[in-house]
Length: 361
Image (tube, rainbow, N blue to C red; front, side, top):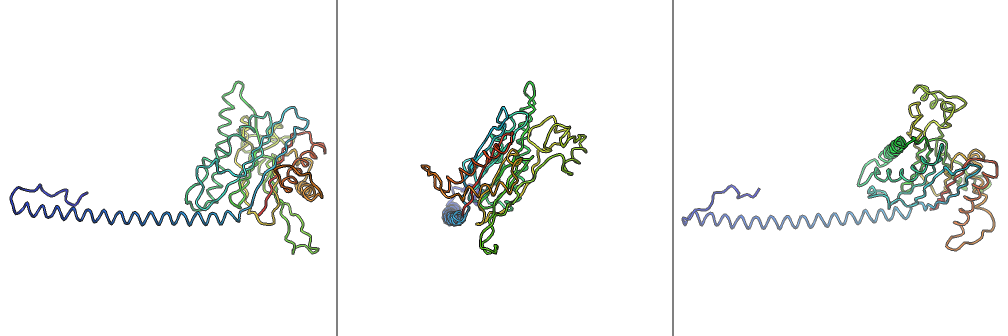
């Protein structure tokens, strides 16, 4: 409120009029001075904000230069199935989907494999919608404890995607009974978050430091980034039985092979849930690649065998040059395609989808 709002109107007599006028002029001068001080303060604050934003941008730029470079390759085989029920998503740079990033984050990448059963509608729905739900819930601004917020974001995203699909499935005539596994790798700068439902898997190839090997040859170490969910596991079976379901022949009600999934509305009352297991791993300069694949691959390959197969292809002597691709990109593309083809050759009749993510610093 203006300081002089409550003063009486000036009278027409000489003395008081002069006094009030003098006060009014003084008020104007004070007001102008206050405005000048305010403008100066605002200019200083604006300059400070710009400087802080510039510094933050420079820090971000420095951080970004030290981040791993990720490139994704995919191979899909139908196998002996009549229909391809797998789906996948590769987003090496997810920034176009995000309205804003947390202040300390420079880049977000997303890779996912979905293995459908009972049809392809659940896997396709998850491939189309899950990362958009993730983008809507992703933390932004200068937030504290980003790690905790990202984990909550992933849990909420899976729940939301499952609810949305079940709502759509139940509205159909007849109702859809499709379901899908989901293995999603979210890379925030150099931190990998893996959210998993069902029996698709993610593994990381990490090379030993040269000093760790007695003969000086670097060996590969295979790290599991996900946990499978099937009804034969004790905790999964107990949850299903507490919900009133049964496990027969290693399946829920003798039918469903997985104990967690997106969709499968008819089994949700039997303890089949859509809450993913979450794992976190920081990438290092010793990491070579990540394999994400549906169970079609892991029915005929162990995780370690798959890693060694890829490494062998990457180390092959000669490669055929392809326009627009570096030699390393050609090798990774070949390794991804050959791994999927080898799974079919080894007798896997199921759909096979493999995503190979190269990691370089």
